Image (cartoon, rainbow, N blue to C red; front, side):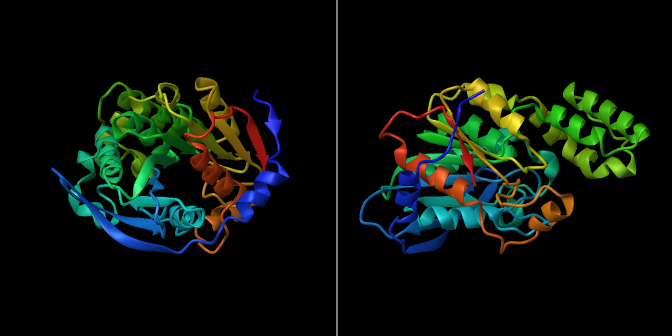
Length: 328
């Protein structure tokens, strides 16, 4: 268990007094053999090269801003804006098959983790070739943390932030989540489906209540996803890394953050008291949690933003610390 420390008043004061930034947003596109991907580049005004972050969204039809059909919370858009106020540029993008990038892969049968990784690598290389930027940092949210870990070496990233990322293979996470949400008969069916997908076998017969998770068209992606172990991918990183996890996250737990830290002990670990999966300080009650997934007006957790900005600003200056920090 890492030692728990509070951020010093000096560090908080220094971050709070950072000079306000003027920034601009412009569209950016990436041509791939399978189609064009679209994103938004946010750049603070500066005469000097800046660090640039590649923001990688989580699972499902989550767009560049962190939104999906079930919730509009602007988590990634708000994070990009907050980082810009700290002098950090960012590129967030619609994954292939999603929003403005839907035409790149309109059939979800053609999606895979490997393709998402290749896209992140290509975006990273595009940013690294831009003389306005002096270093590339990948920030992956939720499932995006796995994509970031797999893409970082090829993309030439100088650092990585795993933001609410699972430490376990996703089939294990699904088994746990479904164990207390499904009645016994559907739970048995879901476990059989997971066993088949883990073995690389697709199944056409899926009960209607399970279609949202296991519909035949999404099974190729799940097979590709189940091949990867997030902790193993994170452990292979040879660059500075930061793990950020909220104590009130109902999708990914503190135990996952601690397991990632155990896999890569030289990573920094930031535990944010009260923060949930969409980076807001919210009570643990389910009603408040769900409401926050569809409320873009809620402020981001201050300590998460300051911790990420401080990590990015320290890369290349001082060795990373492995101590955990706890606060709001």
